[in-house]
Image (cartoon, rainbow, N blue to C red):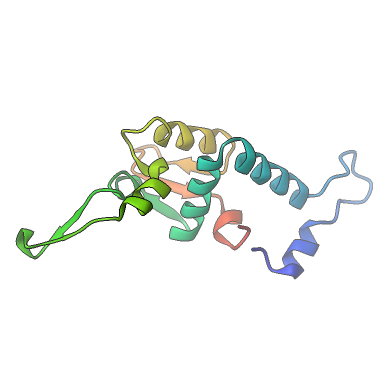
Length: 130
């Protein structure tokens, strides 16, 4: 969540402006719309904001649901079925993964770099908006 002082700062519309809503209103509307219409996109945005202050490696996301093998194959760490179900939006083979990234990019909430190896998250979401 945004600290109350920052929320109050962004909640005021500029005097004399033609558009009388605040920056905070715009962000609230956008995020609420994502939550209601595209909940997996909202979940992805929250996750990206939580993971990194500047960028997230796309390969990290693409492999988030795969088993982690260590100790030369003697150890395997896998997610429970409940966690797999909760994070289905991270499945690059699923219907949502790339569509969500494209949508968030089109809304300027994230930006993919030229190589598409990193996803840069809008500073608003890495500074405690969510």
